[in-house]
Length: 572
Image (cartoon, rainbow, N blue to C red):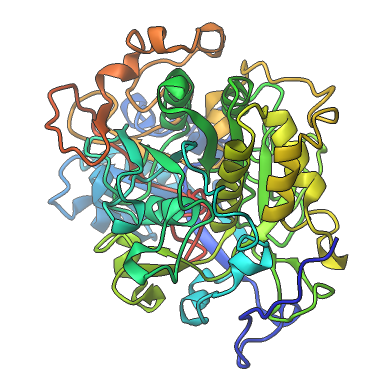
């Protein structure tokens, strides 16, 4: 099947072709979970000094004392410059102030580590690994023309207006949602897992996703509408103003979605979150969680990630074989389909377990959607604004939101659909071209017609797949993405790593995976006391418990405006 011949706003003349574009290396700071051993230390190293040094860093210093170490130093008195001065006296250099941990990052000769740790000015020293990630400069898309025909490209205008997603709810696990006219009263609930406790989007990613899924174009007289302008949104906010979140928060958010699916008729989950973990899906807790959402009757749509164009770059949980993983299509600005291809930034398979991903693609370049005025992304990218109410976004996040909207149309057309059948329909009706054979372009009209006629009822997807056990490591699921939170309540944030969650509690995969997820059991979970739930746009004061929140120390959400943005790479 070929899509209709349509005009596509593509690359401006001064932008080189995909093959000619330079790939930028984004160097991101993140604590390394290195499994290194050490056998001995200098005799002069006092025990109290050694106790200040992270074990992995000790191993690095022992095995390579002549090397230069990248470190993070937590000062005993942040207002003093004594620790910074000592680093310089020892032949090192301060690279960045890190007020969030009351310290700084630095480069230091390995031979000087023990002397630095022996100073009264130093409280703690960790290793600061530099992770080089091949990525594309996403910020350049700010100046590209707005994509005015993506709806025509996937045949949305040909879907009968009676199928607009009415009555179907899409759960959006993201950064919250701003009160914008295009969503009307169709935001049924705002659930906030962050200490902000109001459900509003201060980062800017969630609002953009919500508009692509369900915006009705009220603020533009219908010029900028989403895929399912009649669908409802249930916003599950897991990240605050800097976009940071931890896998443990996402797990809690996924459980909430399952436990409340019947209350809000949640049929689709849009998840534009991912990590660079390579832990096998068969044991990974994040993969296990999205599978539980899937088995509860909810189609899980996950962005592939923006770490392309190299192979093996699919984000977790997009690596899970059960979920529908979406890549971004580059239509090259031509009428014909012959030159279509996967966008250069879009992550590619195979996964670490050998599965071909993404499953499908959707338009993902300069998609116009609702603007979260004053949010982090809005302030950082003024050139991406379209009028006063809209914003251009590029990435696999946007592509996933398009598919989530199309899925909402399908579930209105046939409420009896299962996630396996819906996935089979979306893949089976997708439009293939030479450059998109492995990730065909979603076809809204074909998908809705097939859903209505039950065309794929006898050929559901995911047959014979082995489900995840969830018994793997929470730390391994994070990959190189880490955040800070005040784990012990002393007012000073610590790195969240190891088998603990952001509340500072030990995490046991066996007991976690064995727990029932239901509306009746939600009240007994630890997180239920920390989560604010607001019906629609109703403002509620918070009387429950608060936690410290997270701040960023890595790469996170995958729908980037900057390549390093969304506080990193995990919001696609």
